[in-house]
Image (cartoon, rainbow, N blue to C red; front, side):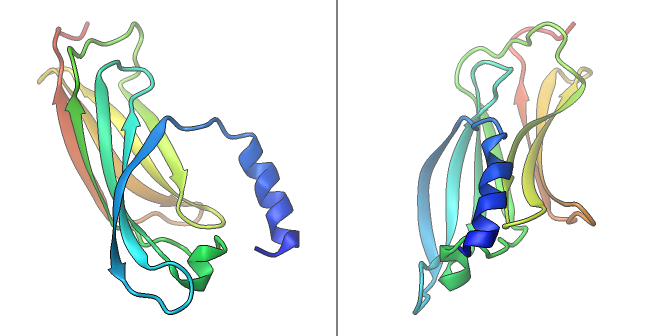
Length: 153
């Protein structure tokens, strides 16, 4: 990465909280002569406010020279599956809709975001993954739901 771009980017990212994520695995999809291959990456995110909910997000990761130096824009292609890893109960004052995770998908201005939505009628937590940009978003999305162990207030 060019030094002039690296310094402002490092300062921007320094103020961001660390995500509780774990890379579970990856599969190469396109061979690249220079730099890493394109791949599909699977990451696990644990919901920071709802215990016993883990979300698995698969996403495209652009390789090549631009991916290697961190300048590639990853395509807005992803999938999500969230599962209960124990009894799911809600904490007090959980918002109806809340952004749970966000990660950068390009050097500037694009991110992958997971939003949690409480469906009180069916007693489930719905998790929606979308791609956002400052100017425009993407219609690509994926959704999953996790049932609650105890009724929501």
